[in-house]
Amino acid sequence: MRALYPGTFDPIHNGHIDIATRAAGLFDELVIGIYNSPPKTLTFETAQRIALAEECLAHLPNVRVMSYHGLTVTFAREIGASVLVRGLRAISDFEFEFQMALTNKKLDPGLEVICLMTSLEYAYLSSSILKEVALLGGDIQHLAPPAIRNALHARFAGLRPEAAASVPIRTSRD
Ligand code: ADP
Image 1 (cartoon, rainbow, N blue to C red):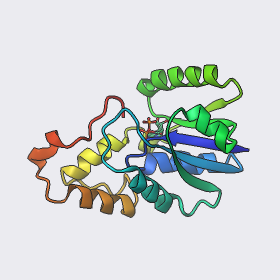
Image 2 (cartoon, helix red, strand yellow; image 1 turned 135 degrees about the vertical axis):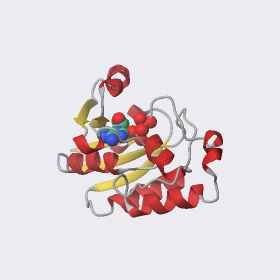
Image 3 (cartoon, helix red, strand yellow; image 1 turned 45 degrees about the horizontal axis):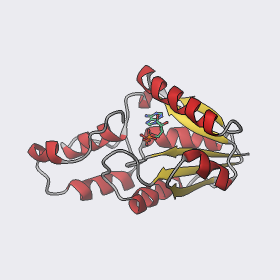
Image 4 (cartoon, rainbow, N blue to C red; image 1 turned 120 degrees about the vertical axis):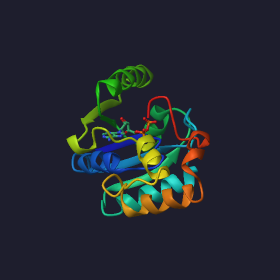
């Protein structure tokens, strides 16, 4: 059975990797679907989000990283995925995921949505928080693998903390 774990992954972090690792153990194949043009301001281009996810998940032989645009259900159908995997951190995630799951179910009743609960140590972790800590020079060693730390340092190099407000990293939900 093939499952699709879709998201923005801007960039991928330990919370995502935890969900991907656990989902890879549940399904024959897991495709990480990197959404090309989300309604969010992106920090990393799609090609870089793909490259970083591939590097961080290279140890999982049944995981593939692909990008997509348009409806998630259409992409799932195209790649033959019968399950969508999502992660839940908190009650605040639930409302959005519930709405998305019901919408996707309406669009494609044959596609099941499975939400995995976050592991306790990543319950607070989001790409936005990761980027904010990195931008302000904080230690992100326990939040993301070295490849992500290097990419964030390169991306934010030379930016002063005072410039934080002008860097497009805050999103409505992430
Ligand atoms: P999206 O824009 O689709 O929400 P994200 O990259 O922010 O993309 O998240 C992708 C999925 O991973 C979502 O289902 C989100 O709830 C889940 N997720 C994000 N961070 C964590 C975490 N720390 N623990 C568990 N799941 C997470």
